[in-house]
Structures are given as C-alpha cells and as structure tokens.
Amino acid sequence: MDLPRSHFARISGFTLVEAMVALVIFSAAAMGIYSWINTNLISLNRLAAVAESEFVVDSAVERLKLVDLRNEAEGVFDVSGYDVHWRASLVEPWKPGRTPRGVISLYDLALFEISLELIKDERSVGAYEFRQVSWYKARKSQAEDDDAPVF
Image 1: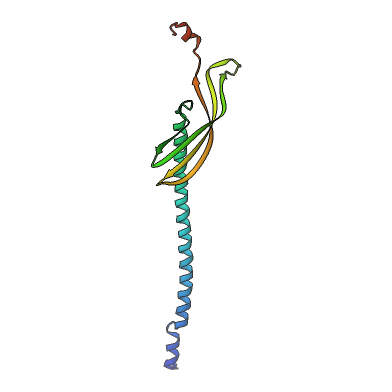
Image 2: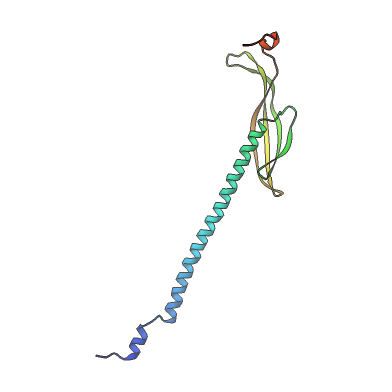
C-alpha cells in the first residue's frame, strides 16, 4: 500500500511555526541563564570589594595601634592603593592604669574614638568608626629609680 507523496512531505520536517516556537523557548532559556550568570558575576565583584576593604581596614587598625595619639589626632596613609584618612577624638581622658590588685601601674591610659574613611581613585569607598585604648609609660619602676642592675 503506497501513501501519497504529499503525506510524506508533511511529516518529514518542522513547519515554520514549530521552528519559531522552538527558537522562542530556546531564547527565553538562554536569557534566563545569561541573567543568572550576570547576577552571580556582580555578586562576586561585590564580595571581592568587601574582602579587599576588610583587609584595608584591618591593616589600618593595626597601623593605628602604633601611633602615639597624644601627639597626632589625624592623618592619612596608604594601604594597598587606598588612601586611609583617620581622625581620633578623646572619649575618656588620660588616667593612671591599675593592676588587677588595684595598684597604680607604670602606664597611663586613655580611650579614643577613631574614624576611618577609605578612598580609592578619588572616590569614598567606606567609612568606619571604632574605639581604641592608647597608653604610654608615665612612671618608672622602682628598679629604674634605684639605678640598680637588674638580673
């Protein structure tokens, strides 16, 4: 039994409508995947910026521990390409430190509030505030007063 040729012509390929529907479905899926990848790349860039600024802030805090805040109240320094602008203001005035037994120690202590601003490429990246205790040796020990050799 032979089928007419027109019957085979209809079932042998896609019609134009079927091809267009397939392209629309493929395009929608491709746009969704592209959007998802783009969102992930944006998040990755933001995460990298946060990690970098965290490193800069940690480095700045460590550097400010070495600054004598009695003589310097503000300044600027560079950390990994960021300009770190800082300002310290006295929160608690200088007081004699005390040992755990309540005896006055050799050091005087003060509490400072420090403000940091990170600037990269002439653009402010972030601002941070923290408190830091500053100290200096205000008194001599008995051994230093007696000028006796200490063994």
